[in-house]
Length: 78
Ligand SMILES: [Zn+2]
Image 1 (cartoon, helix red, strand yellow):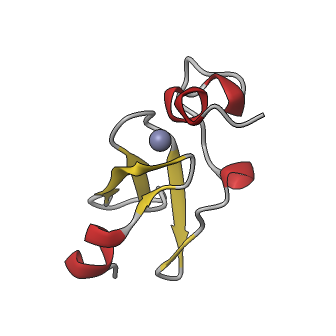
Image 2 (spheres, rainbow, N blue to C red):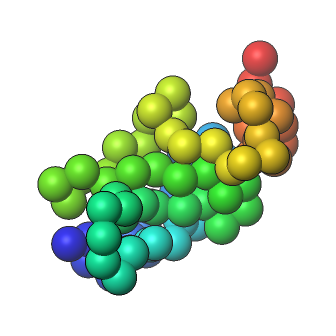
Image 3 (cartoon, helix red, strand yellow):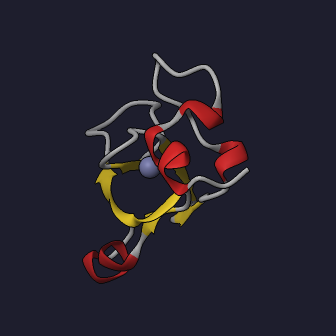
């Protein structure tokens, strides 16, 4: 389980000003995830270890490409 303290220091890897929130499914097969409060990208948590690699993240349904994300655009990196 991710502690509140740990969660409070986590930021979206695409924009380090944006905090993440914990999305903990009640039950079932869904994997818990950290969700960016801005771009809604989901970073899945396996065995209590969040995978914050943008390449492995689950993009929001209306976004086809990592580079279309609001966080990514704002950062202005090539
Ligand atoms: Zn983001």
